[in-house]
Length: 367
Ligand SMILES: [Fe+2]
Image (cartoon, rainbow, N blue to C red; front, side, top):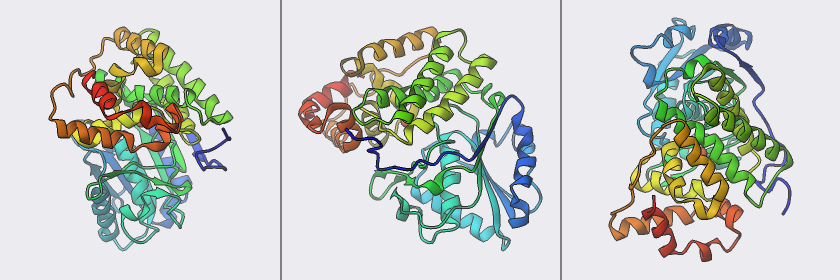
């Protein structure tokens, strides 16, 4: 197996990061020092979780000529929703956009990335779903993660679902990578416990899938190993939401995102995508539901995952696929086996011999 078989042979990471309690207060200064205000206005995309009862929007340093948009994160981003937001930014003012700030979980950070690409490249979001289709550098952008685990702050993609084609695929491009990230572990203190766990586990699951796969990369492996080590500390040593563990998980999320850039996922993510596409289950909780049926594929990692669930007293939904119609199992099968690269990474090129229609249905029923 070759090195860097993801097709990415020269890897770009986030240019700058700052980390530590209270680092959100440095955001206005970082916006200024980037030259954003000489270039134009600043557009802030904020997870609508913070639209009421939170002081976060008032701490961002939004000025009168800037634009603040709350991002609906009830559902995962669609290409249509991204197009609407991009249009709203283009028509809000004749002043150019000097910087974009994405604040929130994976969905809000991904929407900000997608709009930053669309402001400098013609057409619609769906035109750029794929690999290296973005032609012009994006608007300068900063991420402020308020949830840890997806790694969206570090990755070169922004996941979007195209409702017409059913395609869940991002704009994989070096231009999608953030220029600056601000990691303030204070921001994850008020996340509901179950959600904190599900999202954090996205990092653990990405890296256990990558390290169990056939296609590997020396630097990606190192990022993955450190991410797993941090996750073990966070979820097996005391309260996962202590100040120390929130900082560790923020680092794990970032490093896990760096790991994804050079590796593939495995069996969990394709099944999880099936749950998202067919039943509308959100990504991170879907991963955890899939873990119920992963003992045959991930043995000791499966055991460790459930130890973590127990140690943190969190709940993973059960039985979501127990009694579906036969055509829904057909859809789940199709939406799972379509993910050729990760499944070949985990099970080899002949993965369809392992994951037969019957076996896939049995796996979904076991969740
Ligand atoms: Fe994921």
